[in-house]
Image (tube, rainbow, N blue to C red; front, top):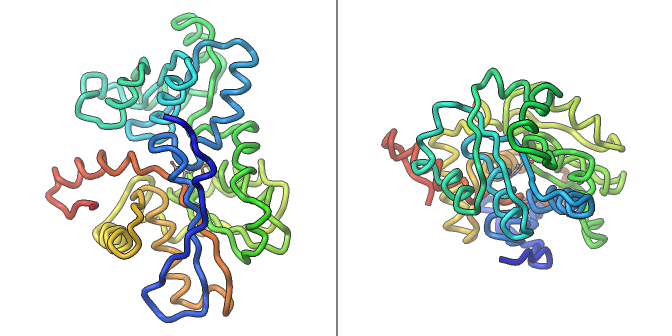
Length: 303
Ligand SMILES: *Cc1c(COP(=O)(O)O)cnc(C)c1O
């Protein structure tokens, strides 16, 4: 399946309440069904680097429902790399078939190593990397979530010259790599708003490491309790949005961001006539795994 960055258009969103604000959604989710949105942007220059340096194996880290794991596996298949996923949680080793993300990654040829949460915390230490090299041979290492300098470079290509017309750029934040790329390619007169998808004050610091401008703000009121935590209000919102706009939102990132944007517009957070561009960073592959969990708990599913 080819990547089609040209499919990422800015689409007008009809707001279901009275406002002078306009909201456009940049459809990065349409670039590729799996390596969608920012994961394509983040992998692009990493893949080019690995190719240029004759690596034949990509190794990366992630949780069991990670969009980055799915994207790396698919990118390996498309570009002809072996892929190794170091997955958080030893207990998952015999549950691959129950997990849509891992099942998909395995079908792309990804090989897994399941490690404990304690070991996973050591993921960037030299001693763990050396241990992995003894086990798997040489590889090109991509960090968890895919954020490094080359990823930021790719994310700087999300905004185009035409996007200078917007007053405000919004994106969901996991590691902050995507937001940093947006900040670096925005105009100083634009405001860049990050919607934190998880709890943690470290995010501001992480973004500051990569961001070259100060025209940004991190909003922390819309993480719904933490990473991959959701509630009925969020599922209802995502389903209403899908019905009204015919656009699917993932529950971990973009769903939370748009919930936040709708609420902030109604609370008068944005100035009159503000033009907002929100980035649909993709992540649709995660809906199936989330629905499995919701079904077990007999809760409302995402449509
Ligand atoms: C990974 C991901 C994010 C977060 O991107 P960061 O660069 O880690 O902040 C946002 N949205 C989706 C859909 C993602 O998969």
